[in-house]
Structures are given as structure tokens and as C-alpha cells.
Image (tube, rainbow, N blue to C red; front, top):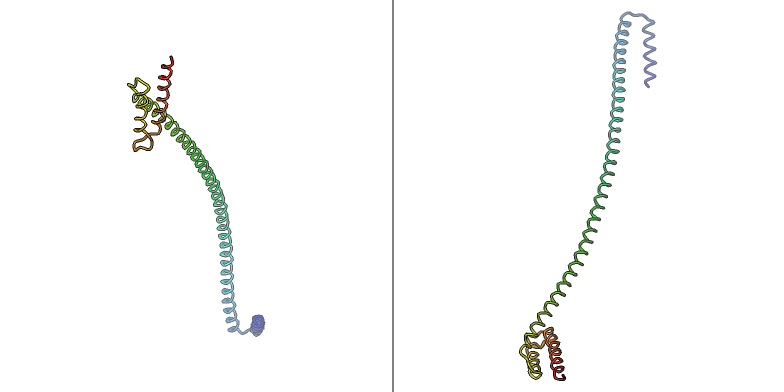
Length: 189
């Protein structure tokens, strides 16, 4: 349709130009001048739009490059943080393993200490029991008095009694056997 209007206008233009009427020619000149100005304005607008599109494209390209650089930078930073986190995790794991080994060693040392303490405590108790038992048999001068003292001590220290002590009874038995043998050996001689 626009082509039809242009052809029609150009035919009208040629008729007016051929007829040569001055008013019509002046009107035609004014129309052409206005049309020329309008076309120049549209050209400028198109040039400005073209320039703006190129500027927008460049700005978009620049922003895209910046975003890509940031993405690459962030990926690099993230990778470094992951490596740093893995190193921290390894350090923590090694630390926990070391703590666990130290705990086991400490537990073993504590058990050994406890055994040593009990062993020493048992030794000290045996020595004290022996000293007490020797004191309990002090003043015995005959086999008959030895047997009587032995029976009395068993009544006192028997484990079934309230204040009974099994270790003390064993110690009393041992000292009694030693003293009895001494008395029997001295009778034989």
C-alpha cells in the first residue's frame, strides 16, 4: 500500500511540476522541504538508535566479561576454600586420632598405675599384717600356749566374723606354722 501511495504522489508531483503553476510549485517545495527535514530527523533518530544499540551491546559485552571474570574468580576462590577446608579437616582428623591415641596411652598408664598401687598396697598390707601377727604371737613360750593363742586369734579374725580379715587369717596361719615348726624342731634336738 505504501508503494501505491508513493507512485501516486510521484505522479501528482510530476503533473504539478509539468504544469508549472508557481503556487503549486511553492507548496511542493515547502512539502519537499518539510519531508526532507522529517527524513533527516528520522535518519538522525535511526543513527542515534544505532549508536545506542552499539553502546548497549558494548556495555552488555563488558558486563558479560565482568561477570565471567567474577565467576572465574569465585570458582578459584571456592576451590581454594575447599582445599583449605580439606586441610583443616585433615588437621582435625589427625588431631582427634592423636587425642585418641593419647587417651588410650593415658588409660593404659592409669591402669598400670592402679595395678602398681594395688600391688604396693597389698605388699604394705601384708608386711603390716605380718608385723601385727608377730606382735600377736609375742610372749608365747610353749607349743601349748602357741596353739591356744592361735585358736583365740582365729576366733577374732575369722572372715565370717563381723571384723574378720581373710588376709590376716592367712598371715596368722603362716606365722603359726613357722612358730610351730620352730617349737617342734627345738623339741627334737
